[in-house]
Length: 216
Image 1: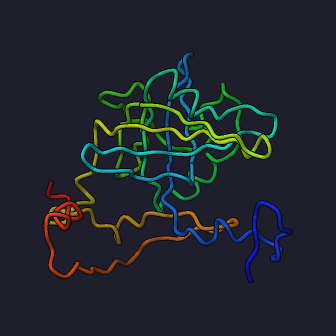
Image 2: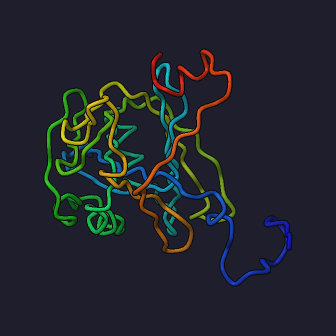
């Protein structure tokens, strides 16, 4: 089976595109509006870009009526956004915060999670989450789509502050991922949970391996 998504009729009842690039990290992002309202929303198109310096991005599609997402507007106006790790324990809160609330609604309250202050960013972070990035806004690249929901803002930021709870760090100094159980986005309405990991070292490791280890 193959088809051209630009022109062909999809040969499956459900779109396979988002179910091929899986699992996808969840950008559970908090921000704050010009009027001081906290915003919290998950984005399934989120990724690290590089580590020296640590840069990240998220992509936010538009609303059917053409409006841009509050997270994008808040990041552009305040100069900051905050990533909060989405975990198995917080899955219901993540899902609740995915609703399209009005800009004046505080999603922290709707999701039932607590606010913790950041050091640099004006937005709060999710207190119950074990890991956070305070991200300084860099730029937005906007790509037009074939519809309003196809329009997408790709937002870039630099991580200038990292928070990790002592409770999730192993004696060796690594984050205990199987214990934390981050969740990831699949296609359709599906999610995955990371509860086991395995290691594979690149044969003949060199300086690039040090980058993978985070030693640089």
